[in-house]
Image (tube, rainbow over all chains, first blue to last red; front, side):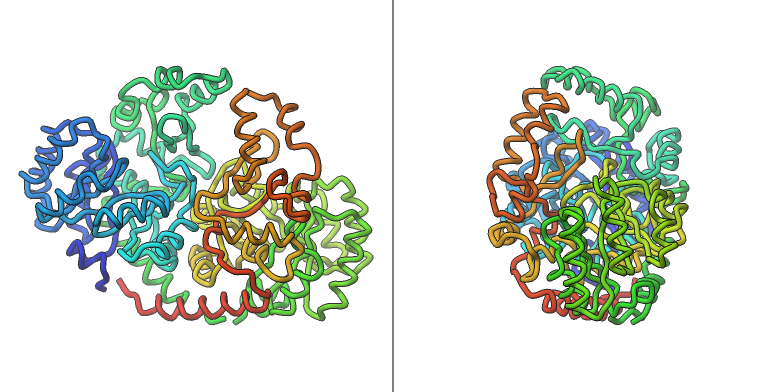
Length: 315
Length: 315
């Protein structure tokens, strides 16, 4: 199968493994790329020199295309972008920031640029900035998230209607059925996060992966909306946040409780009580930790089987 | 096409027109049933004698099956149920309450019973109570809504996995593409609300219908979570609620601001400033007010065209 997304990235299946803090280093990204999808290294949790090493190792581990996800609000953003060019990365996904700042510069260096948005307004802004494609991410997604709370089911058709560049759906997708459903809404491809947290190659702590398997529906909540909205598992830290809200905290109180490095503590170091555990609502459907290759095969098999089943339906 | 849902209700297409307060009287319900889908009268905004008249008029206006949606927390619930039996209604959708209270009694009167849920837990509870099918409604839906904030995209596969009775998807569905997408996730049918608010036959005030057309993504928000969570357009009343929240209100303060009859004021009387305007996120995709028959035809045409298009995709 070929479409705008497979051609844009030179990949077999229109699936992107999301670049996620503390989860997606070179092992996950190269395993993804070697499975026929696009692997992304998540720069958001890496110092510049760490990122450089991950890119170099990924380059050695796969001869397939891979990319880097860069949150544009990153403090060392100029250094990060310089490393990306120096290490000859060909695909960059940008998020959390203004797409007009770096898109032109990246494209001048021959890099394919995709920007992650959570609303029609930012989709249009990204299109104007000249990106090659958009990831439209719904409210159900794990981690940092938009303020409008627009869900995948409503965001995808609205964004597809508004822009003329290809749209990649994200938020709530973990299966072949979900992938087909998102493409039925008009997306040309999907970005999958939570499902790859529960993969053998994710760099997340084993205890966090196990916690993801235990999650049922209702296990996550979008919170800390006054800072940056983030979807978390409802662990002790989350309950501490809930308790703090009851005392009408100031922004400073919230920042103080959040402190620093809670995401690392939770997802990378496995402190399930005090850490931030970022995962999407679809965790409720994830029951096993598998190698990336098997996850991708399951998705493809289910996609084709469901599509065959659906094609018999005629109203 | 025949499936569990079309057979269960004796309808042509597996589509349910949602029973909505102040929108779905006998005109909307009979127009829906006459268009080959299941029309529902929304009892939630009707005094018992008003409901009886609507049922009688609907019976005269269509020879096709129709039903009544009953919020189980309704104050005159016993009288309402008695009227439903007396007027020979054959299908009841229950919501907002415990499904075990009335299901057995209704089924003993030969009535098909469907219960609306927003979580896997309540889906299992409804199945145990003996309902014939479940409506699983996601976070993006308009009006009253679940506390878990689980979206349609993640709720449907999780509920389908948990129960063995048929599942009807609701929340965010307004088009044939959306319907196909929801059925791809495992639903056997769909319940559509917001799209029918913007229909000729809805009893909503014309000014509210026009306001729905103007809504873009981000135009609604789930609020008043301490009372009953409700998704509203962000009008003056909504902004008043936001302002009240800034002063750390008690439950009593919230109840006092909400007062009584705000939904009627907004949706039925057209007071766009002071009324509650309940609508789903998918309002951002609705651009015209059409007769129900045309809406249904558009949905069916788009469903079949999209399905044909999707069936060519093979990974």
